[in-house]
Structure formats: C-alpha cells, structure tokens
Length: 491
Ligand code: ATP
Ligand code: MG
Ligand code: MG
Ligand code: MG
Image (cartoon, rainbow, N blue to C red; front, side, top):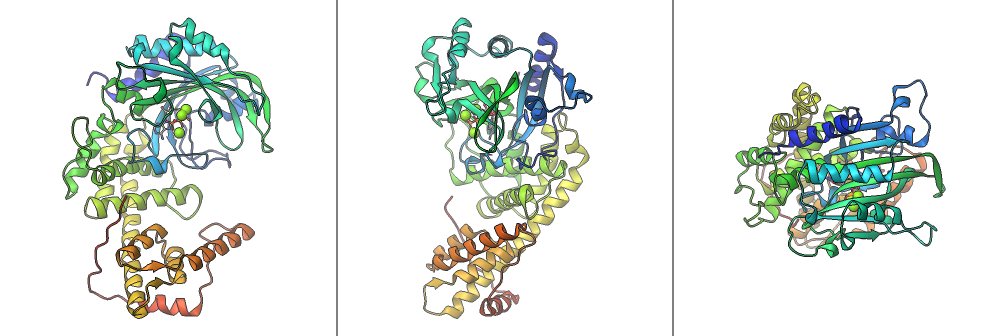
C-alpha cells in the first residue's frame, strides 16, 4: 500500500518538525519512570507530566521544551484506561498501541492545535472532510464547567459543517490521565468508515463504523487526590492519535488487523495453527471464536514483546501480574482455540521485531530474551493447567455422587497454581458440576482483606489451607497418565 505504517508514522513526525517547528522526543519505555499512579505508560503525555504540573527542574532538558512531537509506546491493560476486555472482540482496541502526539507547553493553544490537526489530516494525508466528525466538551453542571464553545467556533471557522460538531460530557470529552494528574476538556476527531450518510449518531457509540482517531486535549487542570480540580500554571496542548487506527483509514481498511501492522502476524499464526486462516477481512465472514483468537494472539504478542524489551516481565504483582495474565490469555487462545503447538507465541516475536523494530530498535536487540521468557512462562502455565485438570478430576472422583465442587479446592488451585477462576468454572460446567461459590467468594474476600491489611504483594501472601484441602491437593498432584478430557468454553 502507498501508506505503509512506517511512512504514516514518519509523515506525522516530519509534519510537526518541519512545518511547525516541533522537537522530536523519543518514546519513553512502557514502564513508568517514578510515577506510582500508573501501571503502564498509557498516553504520550505521561513522560511530560512534570511539565504540565509546572514541576520540572529548570536545569533539565525538559525545561526548554515548548513544542514537542513523538510516537509513544502505550499499554492500556490496567488502571484508569483498561481495554483488555475489548481486545480481540473489536478491531480497534489493542493492549499495546502507538500514540502519535504533538504538544504545546505554554506555547500555542486551541486555535493552532485544531488547525494543524485539520491541515495534517485533510491536506497532508488527504482524508476527505466528509468522513470526519468532531466532538467537543459540552460542559458539566455539577462541576460548574462551561461548554467549550470556543472550540466549536474554531472548527466552524476551519470549514467544518455545524451538524458534524457534537458536544459530549465528562466521559468522552474531558481527558484524565489517571485518578489524579493533569486533565482538561478535549476535542476529538472521528472517522466514518462507511460514508454517504449522516453518521453523527454513531460518534462515541462504540460502533466499528465510526471510530475515534485523534484526541486534542487542552490541559488546564490537575485532578487532586481529594477530587478537586486545581488550575495549572500554564495552558498546554496534548494530542494523541492512534497510529493503528490512522493506518487503517489510510490503507482503506475496516479493521486495524487488516493493515501491514498486523497481517504478517496473522499469516505467521496461521502457519502454526490447525485452523482455517483468518477470515475477518472485509468481504469475508468473521469466523467468530477462531478470528478472535487470531486477533488476541497478534495483539498480545506485540504487548509481551514491547513490555519485556522494556524490562517488564510476567510476574506476581502490579504491571508484572497484568503481563502474566496477558500471556496466559494468549496461551489459552493459542492452544485451546487455534490448537497451535507450544512455542507458537514465542515464534511470533521475530515478526513483531520485523514490523516494529525500525521505530523501536530494542525489539531487535532483545528478540532472544523475549522468546526465552515467553517460552518459559508458557511451559509453566501449561504444566499448571495439566496439574489443575488432574486436581479437578481426582476431586470429582472422590466426591462420588455430589454435584457441588468444594470452593476451598477451587480457591487453592487459583491461589497456589495460578489457575484462572473463570477457567475452573468452565471446566466444571462441562463436567456438569456446580461450584460452591459461596465458600469461594468467602475465601477470596478473606484473602483480599488479609492483603490489604498487610499490604503485601501477591507473591508474598500465602493462603492458609485447611489440612483436608492440602491432603486432597497433594494426593491429586501425584502424576497419573490417563488423558484428561479436552474442554471447551464459550468466548
Ligand atoms: P476510545 O474511546 O476508542 O476507547 P479513548 O477515548 O479511550 O479511545 P484517548 O485516551 O483519547 O482514547 O487516546 C487517544 C487516541 O489513542 C484515541 O483517539 C485512539 O486513536 C487511540 N487509542 C486509545 N485507546 C486505544 C487502544 N486501546 N488501542 C488502539 N488505539 C487506541
Ligand atoms: Mg478508551
Ligand atoms: Mg473516546
Ligand atoms: Mg478519546
């Protein structure tokens, strides 16, 4: 395609550098540097938070920043911005994505920000204005915040039709980094993938037909720990555009997975799986569960590669725990849905490096290490899955006629073997056995209380098991050879 993802990324950066005097600042690692309010870097502005707050050391390089452009590695799989549940189900939310952004730190404000964005999209990238919709902040009576009519006027003056400029409330048009931190009203640009009708009602409606592509935030406040809004020392602009969504528009596709950022991954997955090829492309039927598995794998291996290259390894607490869940989710889809052999996930890492390595060279340097860590964690998880299955079957055998599975056994499977609770539920369902959810929930609540009291991380806490459960577990863990039945679950 004419607009390769590499070209789209560099056109963005060059536009702000050359035509509007911005300075390029490289992406920060996805592990936040010294910010305990964040699990992962979730937006391009994170590394500039001290500038917005007026807390930057005047001797640091940052003190001189006025106009900045970059493409930032972002992960949204926890905290305030958590898209994990959407990933694979839709075709435009990823756990890892790249955010293209331009910033003004006390330099230009609303008018220039809107006109630069409009110029880039319609003139440089050549997107037709009759596919674009604008949202702006409609105010909030409870907070006493006025609607941002100034921004509406700016868009009108740029030639946008009034019925394409729509007000929205706090959820969509007031951007906040986290529970605390810089925030402000925003105006967003949405793209209509269909065209030829009035699509205003589909803006911010979770429709794959009209997708948000660019957010321009007018940073004016800091959200304080007590919930109040403190005005910032200067007015700033913070914008973020998802590279994957922009590339989809420019390559005239309907799904991010049908662009050159993902198609090599889908082909590599197909070579390893025992399933038909990915059929999500426009014109072909979506194969449901199988297609979703392709998308989950392609998404999750990008996230795993980027995170591990940046020093976040799958582990037992915080961001590490989130990454472990992502890995295990990928392994389940890979082995259970696509019936791909162990090692499939790791085998995709060189493809990720090939797609993204030019922009993020650490992917080339760290390829071997990433593959080793992914393989190790996959093996561990597959082995606990096998153990877990044995525990369940042995327990059921011993229970004889009853149809309620002990909550204490389920809980120890989860707590001690890291077995996902939902998976236990599904495996029991297949065997026609109910779970003693009351006990399970009680144990989970007790554990949570314990951890909150002691403030220990997952890795430090041990659940007290009653003797009966321990014996059951030990006995059940003795290896035996008969093949445990295959299980299926709805997605
Ligand atoms: P959405 O409403 O689609 O969830 P958002 O409003 O949460 O997006 P912002 O926080 O405004 O997103 O981030 C700026 C831009 O980053 C979005 O306009 C979009 O292009 C992109 N983006 C946000 N989340 C994701 C994601 N999970 N995957 C890919 N791109 C994303
Ligand atoms: Mg979102
Ligand atoms: Mg949004
Ligand atoms: Mg947004």
